[in-house]
Length: 270
Ligand SMILES: O=C(O)CCC(=O)C(=O)O
Ligand SMILES: [Fe+2]
Image 1: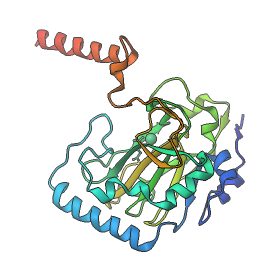
Image 2 (image 1 turned 180 degrees about the vertical axis):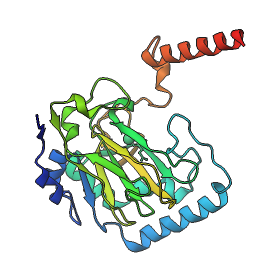
Image 3 (image 1 turned 90 degrees about the vertical axis):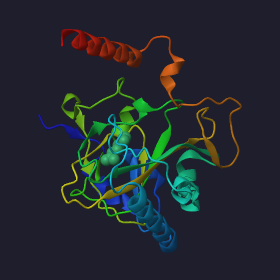
Image 4 (image 1 turned 135 degrees about the vertical axis):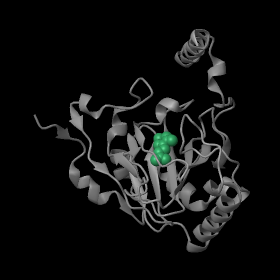
């Protein structure tokens, strides 16, 4: 039986443009802003990235085994704070309201040290605090299907948090979501709800795919790192860093324990 596509395929024609559409974003969970970052700003970020890559990431880099695309190295100041630009804040006001905070800012890159695919997942299951968070993906290179650009399952955020963390099996759902793999150019950026399913293929063109990934949220979330506009709407704060420390026992702690026991058992046998 053919599965019902929710939302209708026709939404794909409305997912991108120079002006943010909050109604489409609410239904789709993703919107692609075209040519929205001033040329001089994006060129300065690109130049800083090129210099940083040439001097610090050329021979090797500290590849995170749990997520090889997530850059571990400390960013230069202008790239570490690029999320403060007005265009991001003005766009996100239309989703999150007048009081907005930063949750996290990092780069996700596909260079020669991390060419592989990223399996279909949602980010909410890896987050701490409230679930109403959004990623801003900001390309400093072209990003497309050939160099491991992101594919989004449009509307899938409507299902919320799926109850576990890992690779999603879309076959197991009664409905299906239209997918889109936008061609991105420097100057564009993507807004994605953190519960939206997304994935990316391998980089087969060999052209580096460089994306900043900034996660923002309403300023009433106690995990906010920095206020971006308005006022804090909470008096309590805690850090999402190293969150397993908040548990006496948990799924992640059990995995760590079993992995350790397995390694010790293998060591004894050898
Ligand atoms: O860089 C990519 O292609 C995807 C990264 C991602 O979705 C993640 O780290 O959560
Ligand atoms: Fe993700």
